[in-house]
Length: 304
Image (cartoon, rainbow, N blue to C red):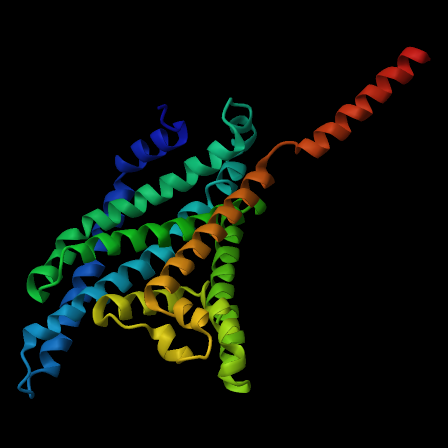
């Protein structure tokens, strides 16, 4: 299987760059700072109680995991937002389009490069995360779920950035638009659900609330933490028990997490398709129209 040339080139160049070393160092420094601040907070809260401080160390896991997901979600769009617009600014986009690579392979190459960068950060943070498992007594399966959610966050953030980069000519504009779309997912998916909960009866609106929450990153992370740390479901607590067995089943933690994951993957794939469509030189429909016009002109010239 042939490796995507963009992934091969970008990963090799960035892995050897001093900038990447600085980014990993700063990332690790932030994670170490978060770890020690959380550790000091936990020990200070248990100083005047009889509870075992080690039993509270388990909460270092969600603190560090959420901190890393937030950092990845904030940094990845910056990298992908300049993927296409940066080529336009350097006036190398037209040269790239003359290669044998398809628009889809170009988009996936840029996105997979950003995901690979995110995994470098995640792998570098494993020693810090390992402290939560050793001290907190968690199962190592939690490390797998942490990496899985980090992959999802990275892919979702990268798809937003690459879509905005395909529409914008300036990288800074693409970054601003990317964060604007972030706000839409955080606010627009939560505000209607909140208004439904406040202004209407739960018994008539559980399905609507679940539908809006499926694409809210905050709700997704909250549900993940509730499920992994307490084997509970925050969504089920919000919705409550309903008369519909189907809604009760959908609101359960595992089912809702699976559906929300599928929804985020589907939206990410949609963004990638939009970016691919945007950078395609000529769509099939336009190609047919252009071919038809050329044939008409040739016919008219031959008749004339």
